[in-house]
Image 1 (cartoon, rainbow, N blue to C red):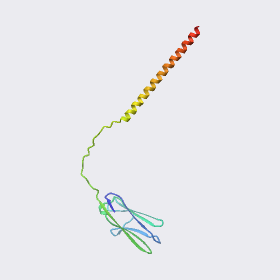
Image 2: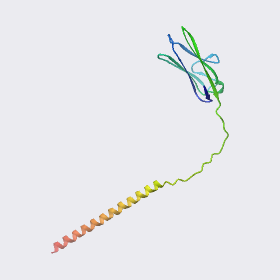
Image 3: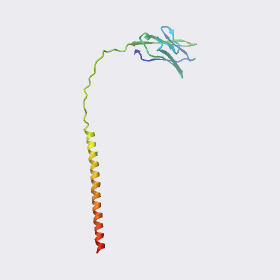
Amino acid sequence: MNVFEGSNVTLECKVSGDPIPSIQWLWRERVIANLSEGISSMQTFIMSEYAEKEKISRLKISSVQEPNAGVYTCVAANTAGKVAKNFTLMVSRIPVTGPKIIEEEKTQEVKEEEEDKSNSMAGMAIGMVAGAVIVLVILAAVLWICHRRKKTEQST
């Protein structure tokens, strides 16, 4: 498994047996204790296990550094025997590149569709107001004519 420095890594070991085996993790041929400090105070080894039909053990290594590279071994044992599986961890430095200036051309976008929408909305509003004024003028004229006719009928 190849990872970059600073990343977190989880190794997983699945075992079965009757009775259910106990699992230990080794690094550089030494047993890793759960929640133990790694190569720096910023690093922790965290182990978790759960079992159903098979037992699964996970070793999480936080903030991996180059000295963490090497062989990690999952050792499962019960009264019937012992088995082991090796995991090879390779750690690469994150590539470093020199600084460069990124120039972006600023272009001005003309959004014709939005302008058309606002123009048509304004035109519609003006049309509605003008229509309402015309209706009011006609209504006033009709009322005035009716009123005049009533007056002339009353005087005769």
